[in-house]
Length: 289
Ligand code: NAP
Image (cartoon, rainbow, N blue to C red; front, side):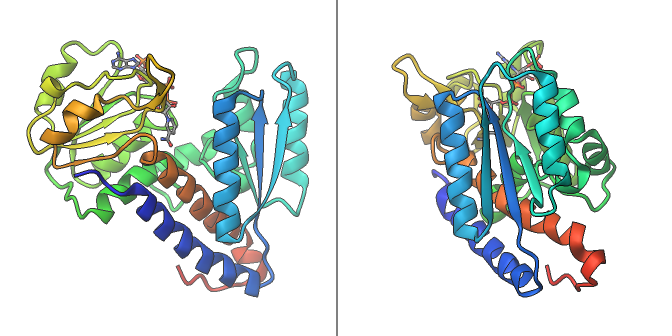
């Protein structure tokens, strides 16, 4: 069955809207700054989707789109300005950045109190150690999809393919924390097929079109396709050979219209939660969610 991720995303945005209304009633107006370097088509679409979702949730946004030749120092200065702007409650830097910019340095520059996708190492460390910090948007979105479909995780064999800090590693951690047995695979994994064949749940986040083929998937498995790629005809596709894999699995997420919209919905959720975390003490507000 193809999971209706757009419906899940809508539900999350509706819930966020309630949180935002509550915040506004307390005099807090969340505003997200979306920072993008370069004006590639794909990045533009991501930024547009994020802005639209925020609008639906009642979150104001400001876009900061820079030429791809921007220097690292200029980008850092721009983020520092956002850090000190009291009207901005959240900052999202669209990754990946051009090669001449050190992503780690940029992530370190985002103030932990405005870091909506857990890019700052201080927040990422807190997340790994299991404190009450935010959860990275895509990984959290994947968990929400599984929860929404009531797919149990305890004791399940899960294979996560891809070990990036923004998707693979946090997803593997969240699944482990929910009592799944997780194998984290990557480009050096030998016999990927053998690991996948044994999996109850496969999460693929590699950026390789059609990496996951029918012969790699156990009948009845759940397949979560995170990849956003272009096929040989330039059409958007995931990491999974959807046409042939879909008939044999119990659940599968489509691309486009799958993990992507849910990730964006989680961004609105994190923006609301961060505004609460940050301003809770200042205004002595009791948190209702
Ligand atoms: P990334 O940083 O480039 O990481 C890709 C990972 O895939 C790496 O760990 C790499 O292994 C592994 N990999 C590459 N080729 C492989 C192969 N043939 N077999 C097994 N593993 C392989 O990418 P990312 O940022 O995590 O993103 C991954 C994909 O998800 C991209 O298509 C991206 O556009 C998409 N994405 C989607 C969303 C969403 O909301 N839907 C959000 C973020 C990203 P090594 O570590 O060994 O190099």
